[in-house]
Amino acid sequence: MSLIFKKFILDENKQIIEEGTGIRVLCEVENEAGDLNIIMMNKGDLLEAGYEIPDDNLYEKETEESPSFNENAELDASTKNSVDEWSNESTRLLLDKYADYLKLVGPMKNSKIKS
Image 1 (cartoon, rainbow, N blue to C red):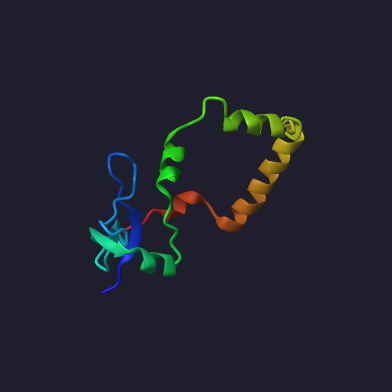
Image 2 (cartoon, rainbow, N blue to C red; image 1 turned 90 degrees about the vertical axis):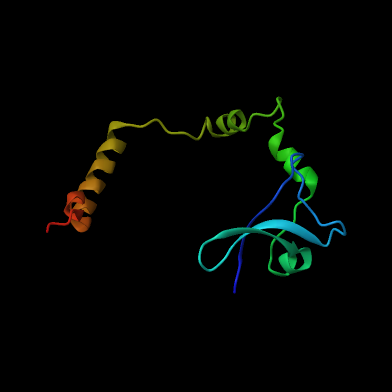
């Protein structure tokens, strides 16, 4: 029976739940039937399979947002000069390409099944 790893199970402090020895961690897995189960998995097996076991600090960093950092503002500042204004020529080109490719794809309403 094969299992597919889905995610690590975290406690109320956003830390990965480990066995007392720290060798195994609590994970959610999916079996061949598609059922989700929660089991203890060996850390070594997960590492061999290519899964990275994050530090507890990683989850804390994900949940806490720095008030001084705004990713969108940084993106806006870096792309402000590289954005082109949308022109009538661009609109015409896009509509022409759409008309050309619509002939190749066909109308979208033909997907209804008639019985």
